[in-house]
Length: 131
Image (cartoon, rainbow, N blue to C red; front, side, top):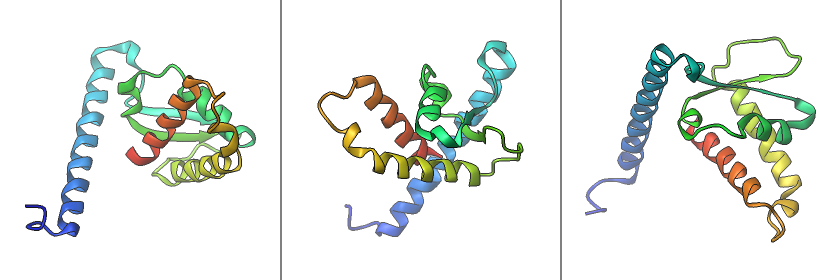
């Protein structure tokens, strides 16, 4: 049956499904904020230092619960004017993270790396795909 549905159509269906799931997660986060005051904002807001992109991003994500990572990501760079993040700032963060990961890739994929670091790198990649 894979031949019955063209690849482009499958891609569109997956995109629609992904957007639907994201809207459900946003709705869930909104209601969690209304009824659970300790749950924080409906968006996942992180503040990152440009001089320490990888380290400060990992610090901002460390200890987050899985449902928090499914919130819409909003990024603020330290010391920069607060603007609305319509995806451009998040995109810039992921580009900077990709550059830094590539420059230090040898240090990340060696047997001595801590499992916690690998988990955080996986979370970063998941956030990039999700957002």
